[in-house]
Amino acid sequence: MLEIRDKKMCSGCSACASVCPEKCISLTSDAEGFLYPQTDHSRCIKCRQCLSVCPFTNPYKETNPLRSFAAKHLNSEIQKKSSSGGVFSALAERIFAAGGVVAGVRWSKDFMSAMFDIAENMEDASSFVGSKYLQAGMEDIYQRCRSYLADGRKVLFTGTPCQVAGLKHFLNREYKNLLTAELICHGAPSPLIWKKYIEKLRSDCKFTELISVNFRDKTEGQRSYHLCVKGNSNKKDFQSFSQRFYDNLYMKAFLQDLSLRPSCYDCAAKKRRSGADLTIGDFWGISKYYPELDDDKGISLVIANNIEALNFLQTLETVSLHQVCYEHGLVGNCMIEESVAEPPNRGSFWRMVRQNQNISTVLWFMTRPSLKQCFHDTVVKFLSVCGLLNLARRLRRG
Ligand SMILES: Cc1cc2nc3c(=O)[nH]c(=O)nc-3n(C[C@H](O)[C@H](O)[C@H](O)COP(=O)(O)OP(=O)(O)OC[C@H]3O[C@@H](n4cnc5c(N)ncnc54)[C@H](O)[C@@H]3O)c2cc1C
Ligand code: SF4
Ligand code: SF4
Ligand code: SF4
Image 1 (cartoon, rainbow, N blue to C red):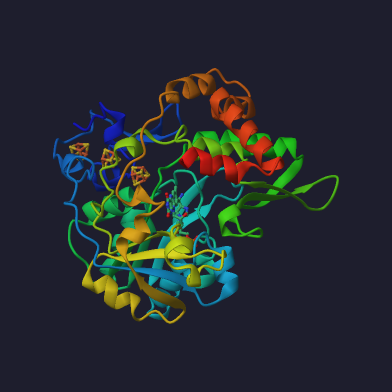
Image 2 (image 1 turned 120 degrees about the horizontal axis):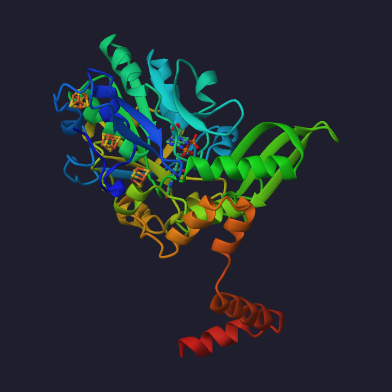
């Protein structure tokens, strides 16, 4: 029945496997480390539920945003710990206060993978705080959410647009007690690349065990965030690795779109086709359009996609909200509406990974700047040292 002929047509959301009454669909990893459904045809009763539930073959229609806000958590510690302005925590706090539960993504104990889980209180939900830049395992999260919804508990489900779309298609009916918040999504990096990268880092840093991983450490400000990994080692009790995102090889491969899932190059869940009530992400255009709100500690862009979501936002007590123009939110964040293009060297990247070469070498080689870029950078550096950079720029502009 269900067969994935074109990998761009499957986000790995797991709705098909979750809906199958015979449990004959399993998700298995391909050579790039992404999960795809595989059907045991001998047990299939040809009910076609897996086909009708798929959000990539039956996407919802695009919708228009209702209202947009710049937002940050009123507790500056939470704002600092969060990837953007901490809106996720404000949403979760409100849901817990109403007796609900929250579905989000946490690290595995060894930090080698990330997966969905359910939290009953803010202490448990603190493990969801912070973006984990790799595709998370879905586990049986849709069934768990459905069971809480059926019990009448409020549920906040947060995830990438394809994961929200998967949940909505799986449920196949509206629940008044469900609130969904999709993340603005650049794309999902391969869990295999993360595992190889973090294993190498752990061995290079001689960590006996990892204590924490933070993709968005803001010690030097939001715009210059660091990947920060802390661990124990035999030499000292505690050590840490910290590197600016634009110097870090894992982040470079992510942001140069090399390590993304094929479906991310033609995403069927963007432009609010996930059916999410809210869209949350970074407000990168903040310093340009609303400099008075910019403290370089992180600010969220929050979009209410329907009236229920707007009403819910207005009940939040731990967040400041400033209404903004949606188009300003799109600046520096076209990912809300567009997929990234597949880079021409993606094939070479994966060939090198499959040849099992040293992951640091592969990442360095594939993300190094071109000769043209090196020449440009050297000229800019030289002009800047001579104090001639502004003059050169003026002359260039004519
Ligand atoms: C793979 C990925 C790509 C992203 N791309 C962009 C982008 O291009 N532009 C942009 O503006 N924002 C992007 N984001 C969202 C951004 O990084 C923040 O997560 C978002 O702004 C929420 O931040 P916060 O401050 O409200 O709270 P935080 O506490 O930092 O948010 C954490 C939330 O993210 C969820 N989460 C964490 N890791 C994952 C994961 N691997 N998969 C699914 N959910 C996860 C948690 O469950 C929680 O709901 C991306 C996030 C991820 C995970
Ligand atoms: S057709 Fe029905 S039984 Fe067969 S794999 Fe799909 S959902 Fe399962
Ligand atoms: S997109 Fe989701 S529902 Fe569709 S085939 Fe892939 S895992 Fe199954
Ligand atoms: S880009 Fe689309 S398919 Fe890829 S992870 Fe994000 S929502 Fe899913």
